[in-house]
Amino acid sequence: MNSAVLVLNQNYEPLNVCNVRRAIVLVFDGKAEVLEVHPQALRSSSREYVAPSVIRMMYLIRRPRPRVKLTRREVFIRDNYTCQYCGRQGLDLTIDHIVPRHRGGPHSWENLVSACKACNHRKGGKTLAQSRMALRSDPAEPRAGMYYTIERRLDTGVSNAWEKFLPGFRPIGVVHGYAGSGSSPN
Image 1: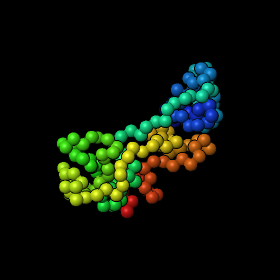
Image 2: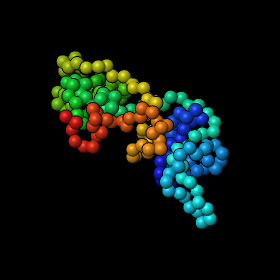
Image 3: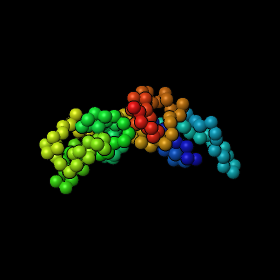
Image 4: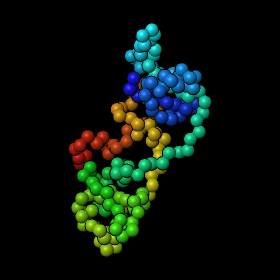
């Protein structure tokens, strides 16, 4: 019952990922139709039901484009796991406030960058001018991609049944062929 189900809008745009129980409720209420099924079935005391893998809503759901949440992981993804001071790429990174918090710097997309430990230590609680350091690029809030809501709700890979509904889908956190399992990509 905890298997992931891809939820598509009426126009086949990926909307969300839910569990099988929620998907079955949507189908039984006439709000969605089943497009693909899991190989295993669900059984009650008197009936057997197909377990949906992909469902499509019967009506169009209008929603605003999601905003990317400000988290360490998202800052690293935005900066491509690269120190914004020296350009070193890897997973042993920290978050640096360009204008330090104790000097009134906000905790915002425009004030946060990825930094290697050496550069972050060198900069310390100083401003860029005081530390005589420069940024490689100006930080900004990233735009949520087409599959942002889907990527954030997946614990495992994408089911084969989903691939035709997610053209061009690429899991997040990939650094030049590296998927983030604990060793350095370099």
